[in-house]
Length: 104
Length: 448
Image 1 (tube, rainbow over the protein chains, first blue to last red):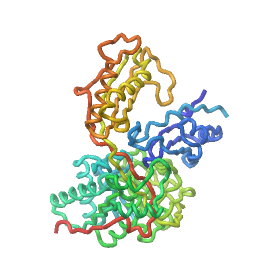
Image 2: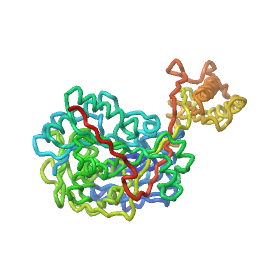
Image 3: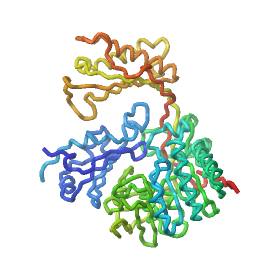
Image 4: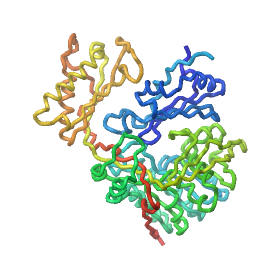
């Protein structure tokens, strides 16, 4: 089984402002990028289930120039609010890391 | 036109040799970004400056002296991290000190960006303040309750101050891009290119390999711009520069500005030399209305925490149940003095089955626990925390063998008061008739 984290060279999350979490998935080469894009696994429905957000609020941008996929969605808790556990949002990549990517 | 960005944020530092290298050539402006909402609402709410006084003073001192020496403007945006009045005042006082230390004289512009609450309430009732999402509801009451609300100004006050001959410009909260894009746009360079250039250099040498908090220089022309890091050990590469627009942005191809959007979907990147990159074809799409993003923070209580740990398998196995019991116990114990709305008790568990991992091996598991209480006063937080800590420490769960105490606490005192807690109370867009509604410029003569 191949996980997304096995294919990505960079897999990171971060705030994009205090309301939004953004995940960057960057690949070293076009073939891995294409394989993940074509797998269709990075879709709003999957992100919605993994992060408990409305699928309609998930923005996915394929940025082929650097072999990257960007996923952005609203934070469950606003950065730094009483129940938030990651002010910078930089350790929220794990749920997508384990997504299974089937061979083409 | 050649523009220098000192580093990723004022206070991070940068290399003198990198700066001196870029200053060998012609430059038109030295700028640096000072702020972010990234470290959370505490700084805006508490009036606290990010970074240390020493690191801020060092970066300002080197930057301002270099700019005066080259007879070009020095521009700082989002002073003191959050860009409110206390933050701007802190930086202004540092700049005064620097002027005195080095016998400097210059014309200073202070761009104030804290917004008047009555103005905001009027805009709110006119329906001219809109949210990005439903995460924060802005009401008249919340505006009143906010410690302060700042607006992220765009290029306009910078252009105004530059045209008025200011040599040092210190701005409150500002779009990162405005610091660097104001001058080229005011001189007629295309805004799409100027904003794209500014977006890349506002993080300093993050766009280089190896990346770092260091000097980068951009040169803008009529139909492209180029980027080069100051330090010879770094190089700008197409991958790094194109990849940089992913960072801390929800979209890598749209930079939203107060009067439009820079569209990078057709941008072209070329390796110019070994160390520099050329960028072209970035466009600007003007918006129909003028908007200012506002940020507010409100006091929501006071925090006390206790940190403890356990590697007892029986405790770790029953942790969910122990946490639930603790919450129940605390509610009952404190009810004569403190109501359920007067505090939030949150038990944060590290090392347990969290964040996607389904199973843990109890034989080797060790958990870290933060008992976290936010109360309406510090006394309430202290009281609730002590009650929760006592229960968790001594709770006699089923099958317990380690009957002397459940938590290894590393500190005496075990209960740590952390003081006031702020939350973002506003992160909205205000539609303005004129951008000058969002700022006030004050000119001063320093030294001389």
